[in-house]
Image 1 (cartoon, protein in one colour):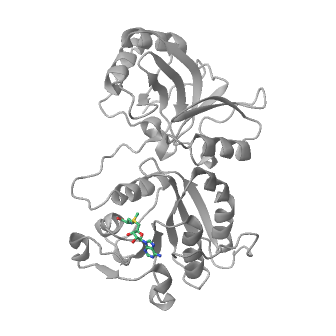
Image 2 (cartoon, rainbow, N blue to C red; image 1 turned 180 degrees about the vertical axis):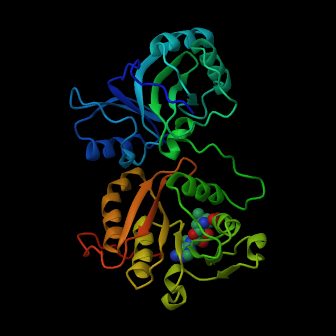
Image 3 (cartoon, protein in one colour; image 1 turned 135 degrees about the horizontal axis):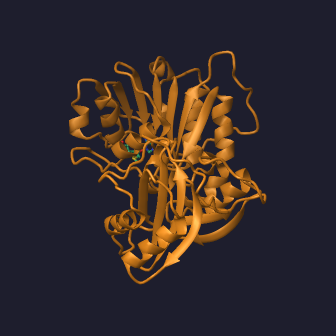
Length: 362
Ligand SMILES: C[S@@+](CC[C@H](N)C(=O)[O-])C[C@H]1O[C@@H](n2cnc3c(N)ncnc32)[C@H](O)[C@@H]1O
């Protein structure tokens, strides 16, 4: 795929971050933490912009995954307003100038907006003279024109260079639908986590999931060829339960004997309990001598303010000898997904300020 020179691009003084509707305050809090020289710009449900700082600073094309609640990060060039799609597209073309785009990403700021993405994308492609394939996904290295449909008569325009998996998807939203034969939406969440974090699962590995019913994530692991144990007091769906490489332990996470967990390659958690309780369950296992190569943990946020606890949770993973990465998956709800890989033995950081406190439920 030929890569165009970015030189004709107006680089823009703002970044634009699509996010879950409702996650804007959590996103702004992350920006204040990890990009303190930036300042808040326009803020709407499902998207926020931040002025790039300090003045003169030119951030790399792809950066700031630490924003966690941003599905992706694009460089904003501004807004266009008009009463027809054709006029909006013509103004978009005038705003971005003459650039050889490899891909065009168009998405709605909020799913419920009554605007048609395919119409807008076709109009922009025609106005900019870009031949676009039906599949809007970009390839790493592609120069992408971004357009957020803010309302029927206003679009936000920007661009980015595709690199991380999520930056190849329009708006950073995982483009795969949930196949009809899957037993829960957790199948799709795990599918996105695998794609977005570049997780490699090997046939014959052993995985255990705490909070496994009805079994979508276990189904995804079984499809990848793993031997799977699902821990949950609730029953797993019969199709998953009947799989020859699946076993259910009908108990709570805290009742699982640690010696039965020895030798697992992957530990997953997806319990609908307070995140501090999930952290306690993880501490019991990872602090108790069980050392899977990887952990994929969902931490549910009872409210967005709990995002403030994230740095402490990540410190706990480091103290257990893991390297954590975290993001809010586009297919998940008010929660974050931590993917952590074990550091080589002998490089364990001593415990620090975070100790997960036990709460009822784990
Ligand atoms: C969101 S659902 C899990 C979905 C599941 N991962 C899937 O793939 O379909 C949350 C589950 O956590 C379970 N759960 C809640 N507290 C638990 C605990 N302390 N130990 C084990 N499971 C727990 C619930 O019974 C419930 O089935």
